[in-house]
Amino acid sequence: MPFYQRLGDLPRKRHIVHRDNGTLLTEEVMGFEGFSGLESILYHLQSPCRVVELGEFEPIVRVEWIPDAHAHRHIRTWDIPHAGDAISGRELLMWNGDVEISLARPAETMDYFFRNGEGDEVIFVHEGSGTLETIFGDVPYKPGDYIVVPRGTTYRFAPVGEQRYLVFETPGLITIPKRYRNEHGQLMEHAPYYHRDIHPPADLKTYREKGEYVVKVRVRDGYQTYVVDYHPFDVVGWDGYLYPWTFSIHDFEPITGRIHQPPPSHQTFQGQNFVICSFCPRKLDFDPQAVPIPYHHSNLQSEEMIYYVSGNFGSRKGVEVGSITLHPSGLPHGPQPGLAEKSIGMHETHELAVMCDTFNPLRLTAFARDLDDGTYWRSWYANAQDGDAAGDTDASGAGLTSHL
Ligand SMILES: [Fe+2]
Image (cartoon, rainbow, N blue to C red; front, side, top):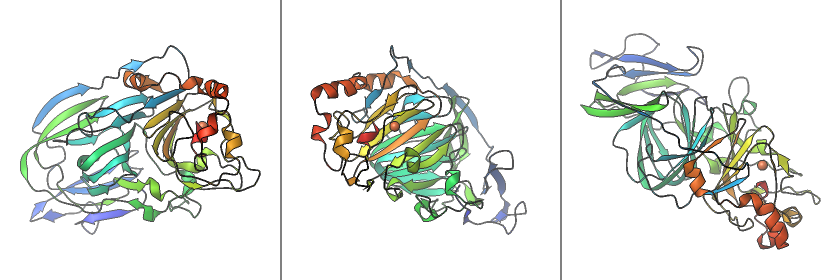
């Protein structure tokens, strides 16, 4: 998506004869917004419509939890069991009409191919490395990578080692914020990342095998299984602006100011009525009078979900790696009692986290309910009663801790 790419063998112009060992290849234009949005053109050995067998359609079932009370939530996820594969193992935590947020801790490797037919995906790799094998070529990934997969991309995970993902799926488009790009699409000097930080497919492999291959496609709120008689990665060449890519959270260049910078300075991706932000290790505000942690704020029109990746959360009782805090709309939130005072004079933070702010309310699942600590809403009061909630903080702990 971010810029023009090409891999493999292409004819000199679009829509002209292109052969492979004498056989006319099938040209496919894969694009958005009719024929006006981003697109790529792929050249297949087989028609991509070719299906041998229609398999099952499995509707997506969401078990909703409607809490008795509207309150801030703390969901602990580190110890969730391994389950399924990289797709079937996605456990939905919260969702609305714009985004679904899931966790996956796969127990097994995919023995089929997958394509999200109606949604873009961002997969944040918390643990594990490997290769996302795709119809556009191999996309290597490692811990800290966001894997951005546009709809229509057939893929499968080839994981190495323990895997843990935070997954966003959206019926809208995932884009790079417009304010980071000039009118030509190039990332500007003030953007927190550059094209060199974006990694498109590195290697196109054309598979010519025949056999029986299962492809599951997410469509119409379910999964449709198809059986085809050729390897789905049959592309000889492609070019365009539409393809999967990775961006490492560790390549996000944090923006620091003399006084506090607001959350939009951490924005990494733009979605349909939501944003994804990266909170990275950084120097804190440098005015001697600065309060480096955020002011209290009321998310009157948004919900704020933060996933804690690594760092020292000792300053926040109970928050640990894999924790998720959810601050729903309609309520103020901010640092716990004592933290603002403690933060004055702090110089840096080492915390790492992914935040998703949605502009429409999120619904919760029974899976989230079972991981909810049930007491987080009371922590502002309880910690004030303790006398000094921030007593166990340290000089590195002010960043995200403050954002709770
Ligand atoms: Fe916040």
